[in-house]
Length: 360
Image 1: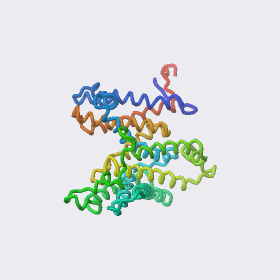
Image 2: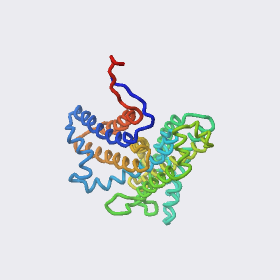
Image 3: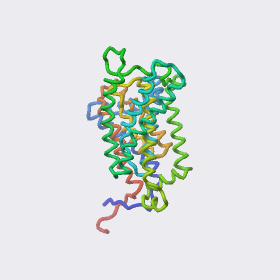
Image 4: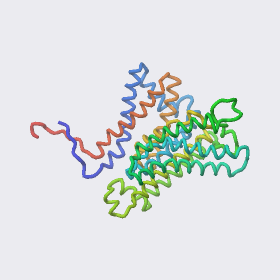
């Protein structure tokens, strides 16, 4: 009989090993999924994980890696701070959308003015927009003890409706012949977020993502606030006895996550996406949850898992084009990774033992 015995403390080995095993097991189960759809599983897995880096068109896909990874890493870093403290922000997608809207609105309000300070002002507006949107669940949590999971998630749908209203109304390009969508910000020099190093895909969003990784590492490991975040997540009661102000911590974690998600939205709308459109929300806010947990809520782990999930985005697009795989199958594949990782977390906290039933 198989039984589970709780470990005295979480296993460091399995904490590192389970993400790797989860990726391998996802490849196997994903291959079975693709085979059930009548596709060659080996070719499908190779198309997703190998071809974007080493295939015949890798020169194009490689520069897409940082473009896709930057918003995932930026959002996941913000989410990880709250998750470590037991504060569950599931609405980063909404904060991402609102950040893009507020930043783009500031830039377009100043059009056709051409000045160097417009883009920095848009960056500040994007971060502030995401911050304000995250303050809604934060204030409701601290004042009325509402569930931040439900509030932040429901606000995603509100943000999507505001996005549609902006694309069809107040931000619609007056020279766009009635088509929905704003002006193309990436083509306006004062508002664009161009590639900084040719051929790498690195723009200011990638710079911000790397800076966020460094800042989060220092905060969590070297600062008293990071200690309070970890202590609150591990033992809320002990944190209260230690004098941690849990309400301020909720505001800080949700506000930081919202600001970083807003930044991700701003860098996306001024760069790769280029404009506010009805389908601007690309699901980065939800995928970043997978990135955060796959990276074990550790900044360096999030950096690596962000690159991995970006690879599945790029490889998934290639699989849709080359193998006619539906986008839903790729989304299932990505979701499978998180579910398998969460299931394997039992190995971190429990030992698996085989007990002789008769002896027991």
